[in-house]
Image 1 (cartoon, chains in turn purple, cyan, yellow):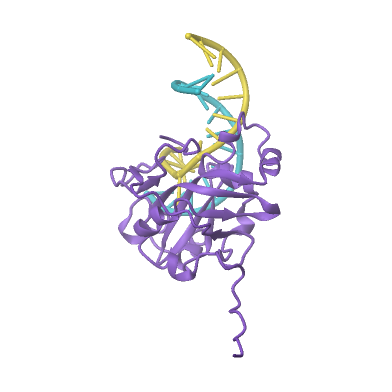
Image 2 (cartoon, rainbow, N blue to C red):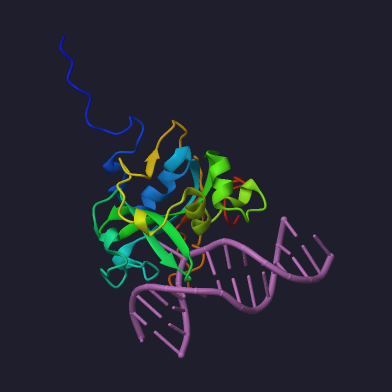
Amino acid sequence: MPRRAAPPIAEPDVLPRTFYGRDPREVAPDLLNKILLGPDGRAGRIVETEAYCGAIDAAAHSFRGRTARNATMFGPPGHLYVYFTYGMHWCANATCGDGTAVLLRALEPLRGLERMRLARPRARSDRELCSGPARLCQALGIDGADDGVDLLDGRLRIADDGTPPPREPAVGPRVGITRAVELPWRWYVPGNAHVSRP
DNA sequence: TGCGGGATTTACT
DNA sequence: GTAAATCCCGCAG
C-alpha cells in the first residue's frame, strides 16, 4: 500500500486553525492547559485567559472597528495579536476572527526557565516569571515584531500535550478594564499557583 | 508577601 | 489631555 505524504503541518500536536475559529468565550477556556511554545525551547502551560469579543465588547480594542494597531484581530484565526500598552508593556492574544481574540494572561513555566530568568531578572521567584500578560511576553521574548505570527507554524505556536482543560475552570470578571467590567469572561485553572490573580 | 504610587508611549476624545 | 487588556520599586509586617 503506497502511503500518502504527511500533510505540511509543522508539528503533529500544534492546534489546528479550526480550534481558533470559534467564539472566543469557547476558545478561552479550551486554551487552558495547552502549551505555548516560544523561541529557544522556552515553553509554558496556559493557566489563565480572557475573551475579547469585538463589536459586542466595549472593552475590546476592536470595539470601534479596525485601526492600525488592532488590524491583526481582523485577520484570520490562529494568529498572535501583540499590542503595546502603558508605555512599556507588550501583551499577546490568540486571534479568533472577526475582531475577536483571547488574551494570554498567565503561564506555568515548563521549559527554558533559565532563559526566562535571564529575560526577567527582577522576578523574585519562578512564580513571577509568567504570572501576568506582560510578564509572559517578557519571559518568552514576545514583542511587536511577533504581531501577526501564525500560531500553526510561526515563532510562537500553541500545542496540545494531551492534558485536557479543567473540567470546571474558574470563571470571573476580567482584569484591568473599566468598560464591560461585569462580564465574566476570564478563565483560569483553579488552584494553580501561576495564575496572576486568584 | 502585600500594598500604594510612579513610569511612559500610544490612541482616541 | 487623558486613559490604557500593567509591572516595578520601596517600604511595611
